[in-house]
Image (cartoon, rainbow, N blue to C red; front, top):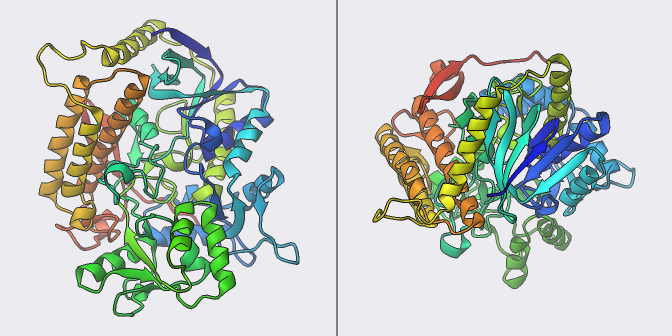
Length: 560
């Protein structure tokens, strides 16, 4: 592989919501050189690729930022970083107004006020939100965007000083040397068997191209992680896996079983309780379950068609080619589990400036833990906070001279690793060779059956987790025996490695929380109750190939 070295002050890994906004803010407020790297083309990459029809985190009139903190904390049964949530909540309205100035269309009433959907949501026309962010990022003269480069590992000696990756299209080996690094990649999808198999596997709730890369590189470098056991399982429209919030909040659709009973309040109205109620209703023979939309007027139905075209057009196509929501209730189901810090609290353990436990490494968006219910505006806010934290870090910390001998060796080893995977002689003569897709399917089957997937109605046991851990370790050992003919195959291999590493850490977290704190999300069949001793954070660090678990006390803030 041809080797290319890129020197920059700040490296941002991931060109999604948080990464783009952090780059914009750093570009506008400093003369630092900033590199933003994405494995795709940032104009349509990540969770916002297809757009979004609402901003789900906003402080409307009559409410305060602390109200949002309390809402998110209640939804997560108290296992949140209230300090991080407050930091975000205090910026939600600011970043919203900033995005409007940059070209985002936010719906307004005849008095010029934003149209809300509930007390914390705003209606938008957001099909172009990602192109807006991309255009704003490229305006910054001190920002360079690198696309189609897959970053796999962090570059570090006494602190984080860049990253390693490879060009998917040009086939080059890339070494990014930086004074500070922001990880702003997505969470992890595709580690469990999905709702829709075979050729429809990518018809899922979360971006299928978010494979846990940011988590993986931090775990391997020794960063502390938090709350992976708070998985996110979305309640979605059946088959299309389109969001249900637009129906529940937009037209007030209630959860309905096949006997015509509204069942949602029987189980509770938190995100996990809405899911779990649907699971139980099906288990007890009262399924299928629906969102009751029949009877809505023609204008509301038309509005729903338009709303879903902004983010999940397949749902609109399903309606217009069969029956619309005004004449047929919308069937719902739970998805496979995901690890994502934008909806739950999974991710890096960070301080209030969003620096991780590794000096020089920052995290924002879906990979930053502790602050669930971020959504789009929360990711923007956290990107801005991280940008400010990076500036402070660079001002307060003299850039230490690197251990060049160590870093040269590290770089050479990484290049050899890539080249070995691309070599036809990667496996010993006569050894069994594997296709990456075969191993991916095996991983999803293992996690589904033994670690609480759809097949077991999200339940798991200690024995099942032990089995899953053993089998996941075996798959990790098979990675060196895969067939990879080009850098696209190499990309698929490293995406599988990322998912396997996340699975390994997730299993350790699920095993460590010996209670059931969030029905469905973390359904421990051995321990179905909530216990006071687990009113804490479950954190982990990878040390000498073993996941070391530690508990941390909850961090609260005062009302203000």
